[in-house]
Amino acid sequence: MDCLFCKIINKEIPAEIVFEDEQVIAFNDINPQAPHHVLVIPKKHIATTNEITDQDTALVGRMHQAAAEIAAERGFATEGYRAVMNCNSHGGQTVYHIHLHLLGGKALGWPPYTDTLKQPV
Ligand code: 5GP
Ligand code: ZN
View 1 (cartoon, rainbow, N blue to C red):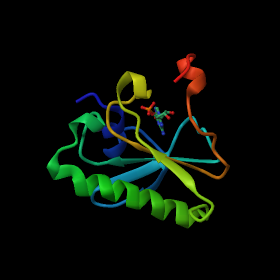
View 2 (tube, rainbow, N blue to C red):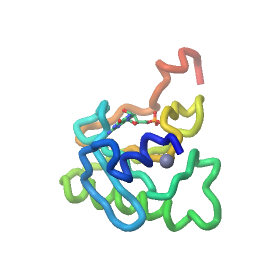
View 3 (cartoon, rainbow, N blue to C red):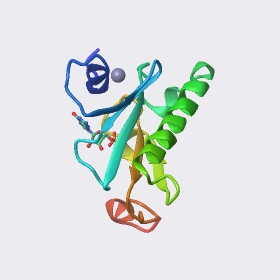
View 4 (cartoon, protein in one colour):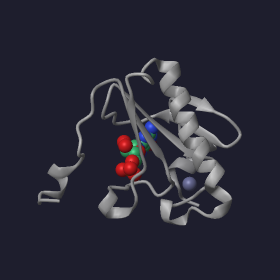
């Protein structure tokens, strides 16, 4: 399977890995959008959030828990952060292996991406 994030999981492509356990791995985003921008991904290949099954619900929960642990370890859990998964083209997904963006270290704007839509939401 030609998947960039599976290659990072298999250590075929380098990444700045910040967390790893049996189920998930996390690494710094190559193009950070905040002082802290970490991607938390499952070791199981799931292309989009539309493909999450009953068997994956604990795994997706573990992704969120790992993100919170990383935020705490880096000292920005109390001030807060955003954890988001983009889905397909309208969601802005570019890598088709689900990943939780953990963004923190500054006050983040809301709503996001209105400039990308270039139309009223
Ligand atoms: P998406 O747009 O699919 O929600 O997010 C994909 C993310 O993966 C982007 O934030 C992008 O910067 C990041 N990314 C793409 N290629 C690489 C890579 O080779 N290494 C790392 N660490 N991040 C990547
Ligand atoms: Zn994959």
